[in-house]
Length: 157
Length: 127
Image (cartoon, rainbow over all chains, first blue to last red; front, side, top):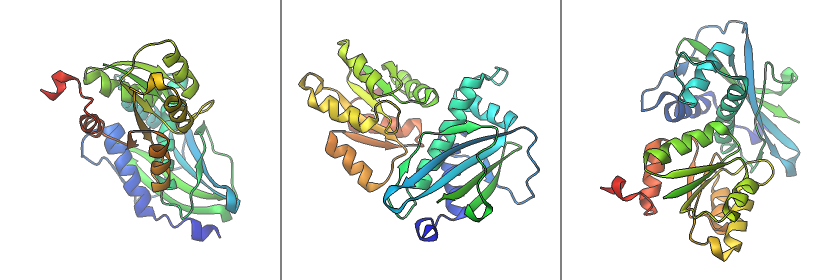
């Protein structure tokens, strides 16, 4: 059932991410986020933000998780909040900005689902709640200004 | 001109407010629909409200419905600014009384273009 609901390709996730970064983070039309073809190193200081999309009538859902490392999340927060490069990033700003990034990415993934879904508010933590491997749907690793981001989709059944 | 920026994300409120301020708006921020209604109740006159859909306490669609129920607020232009991009959701928002719909992510130019379409650019911006 979930395979019919989610037919989101890696290319579509990349396109969404490119749009989000160009509009909200990097400004202009220059694409600074690109697909990473090298292996993803184990994160030293991970930070995850996620949103859930629930299709109530089918009892199904999809989780979109954005993962990066704390220094990259700080950099993203500075860009989103138009802060100086030297400015320290507070925890509240970090959670809000990184959560909003996942919200916009996830919201656009939701529009690609085969059935109308309800979007949750974003959550942010060092690690996302663990899900069984058989619920993994799709992921893509991205490079952005020397940092690695991973966007992954998981089924919630 | 005065705009109410309604979003549970402080980040998004800052982004929207920054664009509007650059265009010459004075902005007031609210973290959910109820806070926004409270701001309207105070009696300040707003020409524009930019409204997120998914928020705690009171969502954007409920806020739009409540604003449209009050004749005193019919002069406010309501623009949804949201990730909800499915056709059905856009139709719901417009049917509830929203005038325009801007999908996140958006560029400053996209927001400016919507305001121009609505005739809500401050005079100096049009010139």
